[in-house]
Length: 165
Length: 200
Image 1: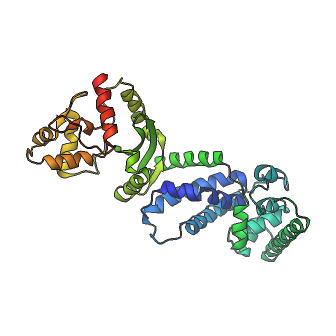
Image 2: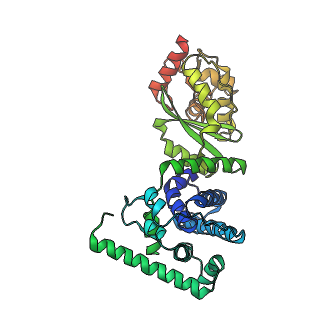
Image 3: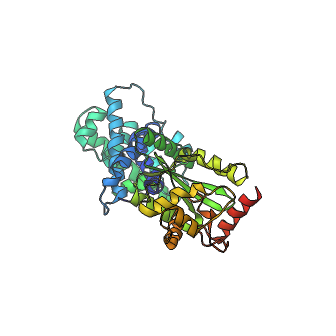
């Protein structure tokens, strides 16, 4: 690629931060973001001119975010630093920019939220999700499915009651 | 994939946080030796100037009329696409430009990277510093000083393509009849610079 890398950061910085947050939460997302763009900057000159830059960045971001998650799992940090359901997420993100799946995701029980994030956003197969969360792959799959089902209900309710988005 | 995109677009990202992350990226890039081209925009009497530097020194100064986006793209192609807005590397240049336009500085003292030039054009641009502050030289005189007295037109081209105008003073090269002649930053900018130096 021979486009100035600055343009890439400007165009995709926010998206990458969202991906990182959805996998690892707000705090660790900054480390994952920084590692993603540094890795991308290193590889940028050699990237194919026809490559889908956003997809490429999201792939790197998922990998970096998952590395962070796995690192935390290995270190067996006892306290999860993620927000209380709904609380900080609402405050930080509001519902200003439309259908706020992030807030709904934050409102899920922790296991479900992480299973959804790791599998659906992080692209991790369920056996690997299970390694991160503990328990069996079947249990991880069930947590993910329950989470998605709850999300669907949440949106349906919002739709029915016509609450502000 | 749809769910992933929705989840992404539902997250409000704060500009301040992105700015802080950008600054961190610049530091990390510099520490890792990956900041090939750093740039900033400096605002002054001749309008916004794009300042760009490699680790070796100031590599480009561009006027707004030269289209900053196009200049950045050209730097990415010719030097490296590892280009980041990184004001810190240009602090010294910006400070000296402040002093110069306030009439308190007569020559610039920053490392200059002339890698964008070679051959005769480079020879010409390297000699520009010999024309003293507040003075002018004709294209013909510069041609003679560069060892090719008949290359008057080529001197004009070299000046027009000077990658670091103002800092390397191609504005001091004028026509033999004393009229200013052309300037990459526009005739008005050239007059302003000549006038500034005459009065200081």
